[in-house]
Image 1 (cartoon, rainbow, N blue to C red):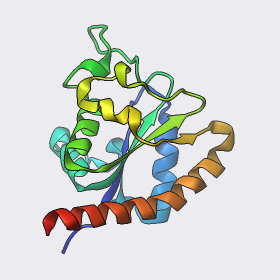
Image 2: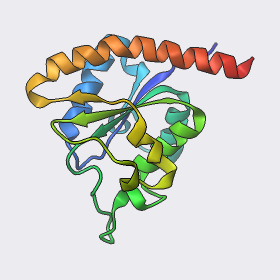
Image 3: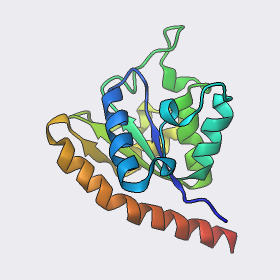
Image 4: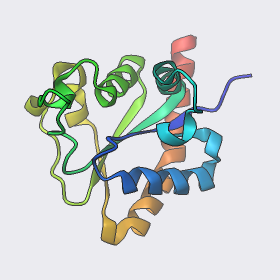
Length: 167
């Protein structure tokens, strides 16, 4: 029996974490908690998190990349932009999704501008050209409702692409 593809919520814990929690709550209510992956809720304590993260990305039909005002310029412990590091989990999850042909949807939080290709490392530069949706604090209900209407179609499209690859 094939598992239903997940909706994977990719986010930085120090960049608008309310948005990840909100989407997790709403999407879990709509599709079931087992159909939505948010690392801090979905990975049990004591589990090898890197294996769980990559496994969940590989089972995902849609990867939602939550991008707030600190996403692009978040720094690692050495003061470098985290996104430029090959070990940055946000980057690794996005790159893995692209390598698998998973549908990747940037979710721009608030009035954050679109990403520009030259701002991103080559491994995830494609993110700047993906059609995005917005999640605005003042219009969150409307924006979440819009995403809820889109996701079934995106998951179906993923299933069609996956089936075509297998045949």
